[in-house]
Length: 242
Ligand code: G3P
Ligand code: MG
Image 1 (cartoon, rainbow, N blue to C red):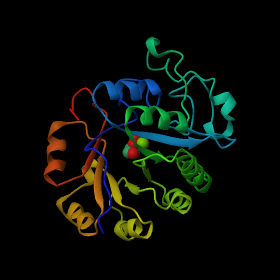
Image 2 (cartoon, protein in one colour):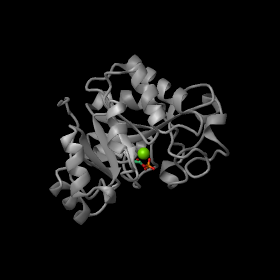
Image 3 (cartoon, rainbow, N blue to C red):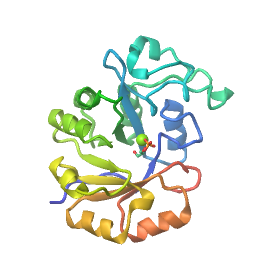
Image 4 (tube, rainbow, N blue to C red):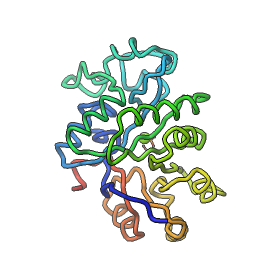
């Protein structure tokens, strides 16, 4: 079965890779300035159920906060500095909510790949809440949802069955194809080095779109293009022209 696929080939990882503080509006603005029209981002939950962007379970690496993000209410998370770690010109940048990022993309005609990044044990609540935010925003074309957590993906799909979703894979573990099918996935998004001619052919034969993360060099991009992949997620928005 072929599904609508409105998504461009190049997708900017965490907004603009490493060129701006990841998963902030400053990063999306920079990726957009480099011509990117689709952004990958990492979505998780505060203690009180706000969906916001942050890659790590903990706050220390990319904010001036401390501890597990999931233990703090949004009111406290919203006050954190999420830009100073990257450099003084981004000091004062805030953690964005998913709703803010959807609005940013909507105003610019851009698309999102929302990676559901649940804290351990919080997979079902996170998947559901992300899907609820999407349902409330009713974005067209819809974001592409993804997760390494099949549980989170299934929870999101139960709330928003029409939203396309893809299974993230670090490796093509045994049973990956059955897993993707059982979850109703339209795509598999695998670590770039994991793609081989065999896995690319298996996914294509199953009608799945095929994406790779995180593609940062020319030879790897060419190899994946030659395998017929449908999309590449990159940090190097200043190098690969979308
Ligand atoms: O969604 C693709 C990629 O972002 C997955 O890895 O750790 O960068 O979120 P990570
Ligand atoms: Mg990610």
